[in-house]
Each structure stands twice: as C-alpha cells, then as structure tokens.
Amino acid sequence: MPELTHANSPQSLSLVLKNDGEELIRLSDEVDAFAERNELAEDARFGLQLCLEEAVMNIVNYGFDDMDEHDILIQLNMQNDGRTLLVSIVDDGTELSYLDEVDLELDSLLEDQALGGLGFHLMRQYSNELTYERKDGRNHLLLTKHVARPDLSG
Amino acid sequence: MDLNTETSNGILVAAPEGRIDGINALQFQQALNGKIDDGVSGVVIDMSDLNYISSAGLRAVLLISKSLQQREARLVLCSLQAPIREVFQISGFDQIIDISEDRDSAIAAMDG
Image (cartoon, rainbow over all chains, first blue to last red; front, side):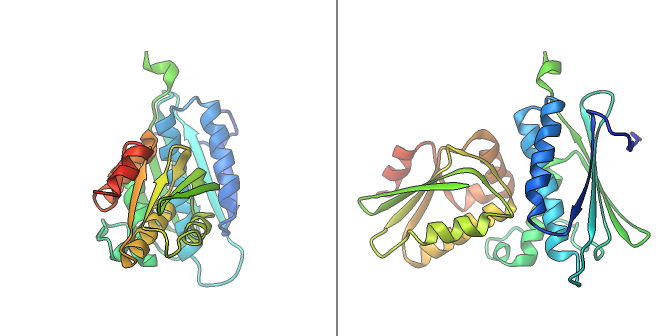
C-alpha cells in the first residue's frame, strides 16, 4: 500500500484547518496551488476540490456538538508514479455514521442530513478508493484518486 | 461569486461567475430569489462562467427549482462547462432539472 509521508515537498501538502466554514477559502487556494505544482488536469482538479470540500464541510457542519475550536488535518501526497494521489483527512469529531449509500430522492435531499449523504456520494464517485476508520477517538478518511497529468498523457 | 442578471419578456436570466460552494451557496440562492418577482414566469441560469459547484450549490439550485415550481414558473440551466455537467449527471440532478445547450435554447424551452 502506498505510504503517506510527512515531508514537505512539491508533491505534498499538509494543512491544519479550524472547524470553521470560512477555512474553505484557504483550503481551495492551497489545493489550487498543489494542483498547479503537480500539473493536474482540469477534471482531476475539480474532483479533488470537490472531495475535500465535501469532507471538510461535513466535519464542520455535523462533526462537533460543542462550540470549541477543533483541528482538521489534511494531507495530500502525490505518489512517485505521478498518477496516484493520496488524501488523508483526520478530525476528532463525532464518528461518521452515514458512509453507506444514501437515498438520492429529490425531497430527501432538501434535508440537511441528506446533504451530507449527497456529499459522500459525490466523494465516492470522484475517488477511486475511499476508506474510513475510527481510531484513537478520531475519524480517519483516506481517499485515493488516480489523476491524469497532461504531460504524461502522450 | 458574482451574479449577473437580466430580465426580458418575463424570463430572468442569471449568470453566476466562479464558484458556488459551501461558503456562498446560500448567498447565491438568496440573491437569485431576490430577483424573482410576480412578473417572472421562468428563470434561466447560464453557467458558462461557473467553474465549480459542490453539493451545497446543487442543493441551492434544487431549492430554487422547488420554489419556482410552487409559483408555476420554470427553471432551465444552460451552457454548463464539462466538469459542471458531469457533477449534475453523477448526482442525478440532470434527471430532475432541465438543462439546455445554450442560452437561446434555454429561453426557447420556456415556451415548450
């Protein structure tokens, strides 16, 4: 299994976000810069931004019962093949309970909880592998995404 | 996100620019709803300058659609960039919201 490394390099990105929706702006900017550094194709950039937003907004909106500040740890690592991207998202919020496929009925999507389900549905569709583990009181979401790079396609 | 709007013959055409995400989806929804008055019989959202939308944005579009249905007015989306079109397909929203190729065909679809 590919390893996540903690070293800072052009192929990696480590971020600590607060549980505040406004952090999405910083996340988006950092992910854009990462995508630029690694020459990701447009559809891969879109999918990466989408997966990260859905994961983080889910944690921000539903992860905490208190009003305290919490850290959300984000790590992106491009593997040496230049095509496999590992994304790790760790938080100390409540255990994720709706990773199962959701009912995408029109009316149910108008309810807040179902929106989280739609976010997970999109994450699954835009990633090649999505694993979740509850460990040491934290949620560990690991996402693998195969990305196309224009310079490797020909 | 900027939202440019114009109304002609009872059709409101709204063109959001940039992103509709978890931060501004509600703002987008409220800004658009604020432009819809009794004289509006249909709304076209021209997405040619929209390059990102997440589940929060999809939900906003759905809520606008529901709100228009209650007024017996229609919603048609048009000019979706490829990644935006894909997210509508993947979410199944393309089955419940009308999508046209371009602004002219969207406005024409209002009569159909």
